[in-house]
Image (cartoon, rainbow, N blue to C red; front, side):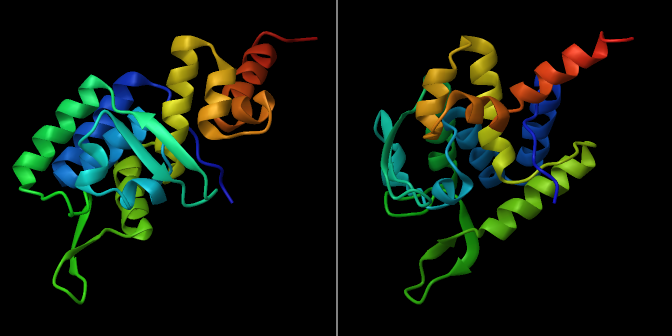
Length: 186
């Protein structure tokens, strides 16, 4: 089994976002939410418009059952407003909608499998190796760490038990090992 990695290169990350936008605004907004909050894909797919119209996203995490609160930064807020308006979504609608409807005729959220397939397809198109739904979360963590160098904050965001777990999770440990080996020679 391959472990997914963050997208480290910012230009490649922009290409990735643009390709997702070409495939559909819902895939783009799914990506932008993940990259700006670090939420797991299962939690992103459960978001409704009502969940994102305030200053924070407050959710009960699907995996841990714990309540978390995430700030919606200005750029994400603007992207969400544009998307919600363009898609003519109501407060009770899922943000990332499928073409399928539930028994009441309401649109359902896309599945994890659909999210994985679109991310994997775009990743393959761009030559990105080891990509999956966790790539968004790991990419958030990687770039957050590169910007602020504060593993304690990320550890708390990700709810990890130790800084070493967080550094390994976002690929920093691999980067450090690679840099020591690249200049090591006997």
